[in-house]
Image (cartoon, rainbow, N blue to C red; front, side, top):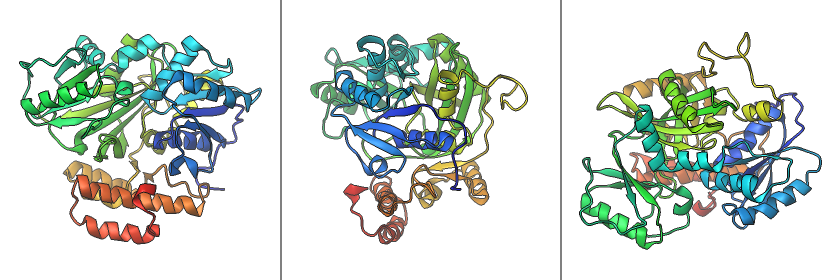
Length: 447
């Protein structure tokens, strides 16, 4: 029997995931680990992570971010799975939004279950200016924030109430994806007031007319970042929480800020703060929070809420709690775990205890290289000695195609090259040469 063999629990449904990234693959792997089933993944392109998987039936959609383009593809999938419930998930904000529109406005095959909040709650939670206001109202720790509305021209006398450098990022991610300009990143670090004004003018000229969030830049590198994933029931009560301490983030343009390595843990205080946010929003299903520890005042601060399981959702599975089972138990089994022996629920009514496990999508050598804080180095040594490491791309006994193994090695090489370029690791050349030999020379653009 392969490692992480699926349970014998009956699987009388089909999971459908919109999105073609590693987050979509991680959801498919979670469904396979829990129920031994394949997942339909709808994507614009079939990159190697999805296209070479033994777990996935890939269906193409010209624009999965557009509800009208997605609708006929979802109907095609439904027609191909007669008589079965279909659990519909998005792997990014930009795919969750059209799913909500289809469910609430345009219409879906009634067999689809889309376990998301309504559009009003989605907009209130994901609009970053709204999230800041919520944190202020509820006494939830968050960084100083200035909202700049690009519906109007940027005033030359714009006042920024905190010191530079600052962080600038879009308030509406789905609209951000539709524009392009030289130097565009997911998040920008801006060194001076003049550079900020120039960036805002550039963004507006590219056609973006939503708000840009300018935030106080909390000092510290990736090792100060935190991640929290919670599951809320129909009454907006947090039933499950998975906390993590980021060791390393992606640094290549377009992916900057995505966690590349996380060690799981527990932080009940931050879960309690997340509960206040979820209660006010009337949230149901998963919420994924980005946070950062501020060494200036010893507080951990919320940046934003993502309305779904995040791109790095496999850190939850690696920590011992398969996240998709909460969807299935609530929406298909009517069997959320209750308080009592064997439920795993603590005195606060929340499942959140988990061992320290390293989640990584990059070579461990890179994680070691960039883990420099003594406390984090000690955590890393503990999990490596115990062999508690989870990489969603390594699925022994299941993902066995030789081509996939070559692509995975090439992706590892590519990650080293990207960090060498954007983070300039010492000794990166030696590690890159080693991985290039092991990958058989698969070119970078295939990784």
